[in-house]
Length: 428
View 1 (cartoon, helix red, strand yellow):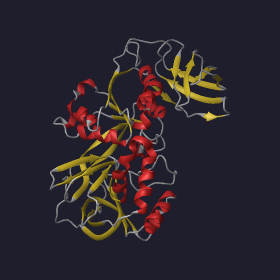
View 2 (tube, helix red, strand yellow):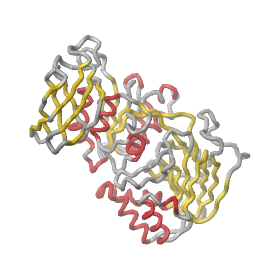
View 3 (cartoon, one colour):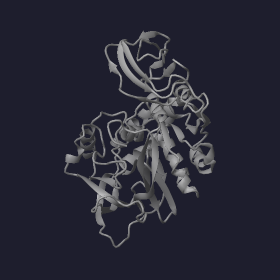
View 4 (spheres, rainbow, N blue to C red):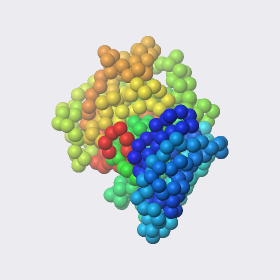
């Protein structure tokens, strides 16, 4: 069933709502089922072809609620052989890659109970594969026959599972075909900054409805290269060095027992024994607007690189705004970043010591961190980071820690990817 919402829910009280729908076409004559965005709400069934209907809604506990008024426009009152429904149409074929360990191990249950019914009812044909270990999703997206999932790969989990899938796709020989396959995200992980920042989606049911609608959003891809180690990793959210990557490393010890709050625990532990982070940083400022997608992947050495050397609490290279699902709405790491503007946003947090770190994170919580004298914010084409001395060598990419020796160069990849859905308060 293809559908588009003509308006969002307007709450009258806890049980009386007004909602406008547009359906095209219906699955059965005079009967349409719709799953609202709220995860706690079940299936709404309209059983009239009149413009105004008075249906019941069954919530997840089986209780009945009644809408005060529902307006529905039926483009077709009967189903035909070429309808976009489960009755007669070639279904949308997708691969579902599910991380069973995300969301305190509840991602599989969330998918089966909240997401799968929506997609099935909308006519999706799904092959569901649960990952067995780290790297499984990368191998899967690298080797799968893309003809089996032409309508998308749907990732169930956090930012890490999406990162694995895109790294598999972007390493394929048939790269043009690979980047044409859109990526769907059902957020069930510890943090889902990508879905929240780019698509404005926090919960699984909203994500499923966005996938059903079929809109797509283009997003830039960045690459981190370690030339000495002959290694490369792609990302969609951010690359980080210093305190944040240190916390990522330490948090892995608590993943099994503490889920999302493991980052807070690891951060507190590292805070009380804060080391000094010393880096050499070189960056190429963005001076002429957007970076062209066919630019060289690594900018030339003779270009006007700016150099910094010293102590840095953190270095963050952001590909979008990097909102935090668990934080306040004001907590936006890179407020000037746009997910498809052809540039990266660099934050340099100068200095060391627990007091400066505390000041930075309190300011970040309320969106005031860019006003701090020790914080630099620059639009860049590329960034090269070299750790010195005993500084931790890891780099956090999309929330996953990557180890490699030598300087790390972050720059935009020559391709964009497509995400299923779009932010309703923004353009596509």
